[in-house]
Image 1 (cartoon, rainbow, N blue to C red):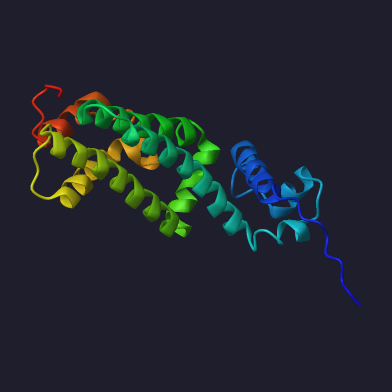
Image 2 (cartoon, rainbow, N blue to C red):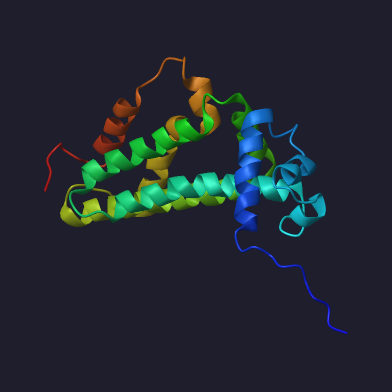
Amino acid sequence: MTLVSEPIEPDTRERILVVAERLFRQIGYQKTTVADIAKELHMSPANVYRFFDSKRAIHTGVARTLMGGVEGAADIIAARPGPAAPRLRELLATIHRMNCERYVGDAKLHEMVAVAMEENWEVCEAHMLLITEIIGRVIAQGMATGEFRTADLQLTAMSATTAMMRFFHPQMIAQCATKPGPTIDQMIDFVLAGLGWNGATV
């Protein structure tokens, strides 16, 4: 006897993540249950568990989607032709702006980010490694054209990312918003100066 499996819509996994993100924003990560997500999708919790084995797995998927959007935008900027310095400025400013839009000013989504930092650190670490790699690509392009001067590309990329952490890390963005410190533009100027950029374009 042949068992006929229930048809699976190819976009079901994506729809689960979209609904989960909306509920996390509306009622909070801690209060949202898999049953809530299933109800919104007009399916059973058991069906949701066919795609994600736990609420934590859904949470990880939502976090990856949000981070992936930032990574995609950063990658597009890094791939553009032209001088490296203005692209690096745009890249750093864009990461900051997108993280502000996604995570800051929304207490419920901020809660989700805090949980991600505690429970799904591997996802966050992979994201920052990729962001550092993209920043390194632009720095390498600037080195090739003589815009930037550095002896160690990997260390320089990591240092630039670390210098921007106040403007990249969602929790630090929120915590430092009302505290004294450099503006985003001032910090980017500092990073560019550290790369030996003299303000000229090639």
